[in-house]
Image (cartoon, rainbow, N blue to C red; front, top):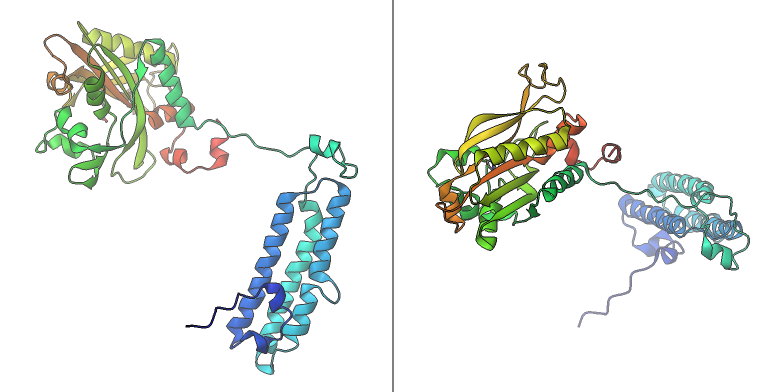
Length: 381
Ligand code: PHE
């Protein structure tokens, strides 16, 4: 049987032993000992700061105890380290031990000086009603900064609100999706060159991170049948190189309406109404022909440039129009995959990029800002 392991020594025990009893074999060992002391110093000071004090008197007491523990003339940790470590270091180690010791002592002195200002007084109901001396009620209380709603979430909610007002409901679907829902059911067979339009991140040969929110169209049709008016906000993933307009993860909002007698006029009317609600009444919309395998006919919705109001500028490349989303009439094959009879029903769909909308609305020129979590950026919203 191996001998029972000795419990590890605390730093308080170590500092009371001369170096030769501490198995010191080189400068590295001495450095580690001083490092442990310096870590202990930081740890103790931090926990005092976190705890705070309930009164001026208590704060004074805490600082005094801390000072004695570290700088006390005989039994303070610094005095002990001087006595037991520095003085017992052989000539080989003297110089290095002296260097470590001086650095530590400077660190301790700095902490002892800084501590009183770092320990805050709790001023509050419990301070008033406890016997904790006489709290200074004129001091400001603890500031608890409030967070704010992330701009992507904010824009997503704004879009949701507009469509909820039109009678749409919110749907969601998985971010880890099957090849079937992301492509096949949306009329994009494996051989189709359009698969290359979505730089897909695969989990395995049949599973991927959804490249758009369109798979939720199929899931919603399967689940609810027709008629259907849904909106699906959510995260999407593409194997894009990050730059000012591309991010590996981004957000889309998908819209889908399926009912009897739905025509392209419904799509145009709804998206025109939406664009004016979101960007302001002055906005004009325009539809350009486009291609998506899951819509026929397909279009790109363009809005009059929010920066130059259609006059022509750098942002709209002098055209006066900016494309903001893909849309079209749901392909009959897609309705069929959702279990809906295309002879009876028709529908329209759209998909838009939330970050892009936020960038236009708040005049932000780099998509990366949304995902870096920099408070200086976020607190502006
Ligand atoms: N899913 C398409 C994209 O990611 C957008 C789209 C959605 C187009 C619905 C038409 C209809 O680019």
